[in-house]
Length: 367
Image (tube, rainbow, N blue to C red):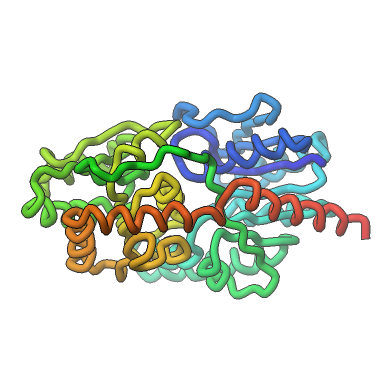
């Protein structure tokens, strides 16, 4: 079977990039032919390795707004005719991703969504015209999504956002197995993610500034690429926590970093899934995270494998963080359950669901 993925980018350290590398590696090893079409070329380095048997094609549609759709359509149609895939999977949260059903006919189409749909209504930008534009775009993308043969989201909360009956929930897979868990005895908390506003580093640093007043010997390690448009190092200075924060670059193999940590923090304003949570838990690290849309509540079981905090409640977040810092045995207890609770995300189990879906859709085209 031949699969064609259409995505915005495969470079950089985003969660989608890692997951796409993991899934496509699994699929080609199972005998699938896989082609990835990248629509937004950039100069970022490749953090994650893709199997050599995965064919990667980059297209550069005309950026002129008047000609963009026709250029995009021409590229996608031409490549699809050449590749002749059995199934096309679109991993693009942008507006152009919803245009694919207008371009491709008689091929099963999957829309694979990473991220909360409701955020389309909450994007920054003031003014009546911008608000109207967001609402029009929201309802239009909802209509266009219904033209796909299948929509796949990462969790039940995301499924409810769409309001369609025929939606599959297939979580991201855990991409590694570990035997050596974190001993949880280092005075290190960890956070992993892009340096962007939606990751909520301002919220994290305000909380951390209060925590280190009682625990000045603890360090927060943050793994993510520097972003000149959102300088979180300056943000750390603003909260006077620079001595208790260490900034690290993205790691292809982040496992060692988790194994050295004792607590994982997540203060995002939104998460499509919360990959960092299952990665940390797989290493036996308990997590404290905000109940933001839409991923953490499907992963963190409050008081069992970590703490799920009402979104924005910084006092409660700091309280649970202090509890874990001060009680080593409690950290251990939550860490043991954390490791066990992410078994449902094991790679083979998740990919079985994808293969079952591919089989159903490939058969449907002959009916």
